[in-house]
Length: 227
Image (tube, rainbow, N blue to C red; front, side, top):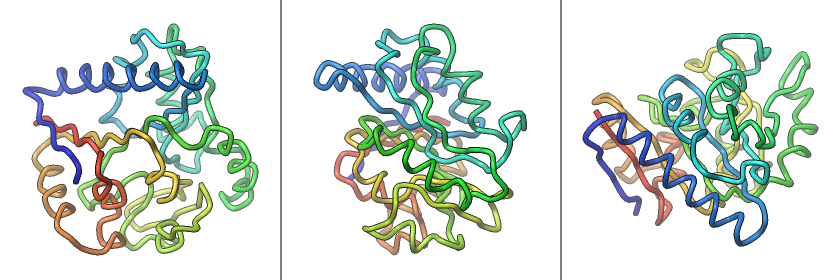
């Protein structure tokens, strides 16, 4: 069962999680000469990503990718890739290798094969940090999404396009097998609405109803929470 960790405030959470993730990346680099890290988009993880950028890591040996991305141009304020470059990939951490999660094209399907070829060398992930929505989605695995069952399957490809009512744009997301295979998994949540959603997600039930269960049901997942 996952481990729940509550912090006095969000600042302490973000700094502590950054230190934990940096240590896990350093362990992977020491063992294999490189490490792979996947992080969430959205506004909540920004302070964590900035704190992580300041950690003592051999960033030139780290592959960095997003857990999911909106199918938008990087110039868009909705782009998670843009957020990542403005927060994590700064200073020494700018030396990390950014693994693309979106390419130019008319549809996600058009660029999917090229994206999968790009991320395969970075798998399995050494560290995976995820967020969770109030609807209990994680990455872009949304309840009711058009290809959710396919993405939850044990034989799913590493990436799939995803469209859902609450998603806005089409998305490209890591699938359940990639999430389950990560060596270290962290779920970052803040605020009372998210803790209420977490309590529902921790009740036994189908993953399709609460896709975050993909990682909550793993034995070593750490949940990091602050009001």
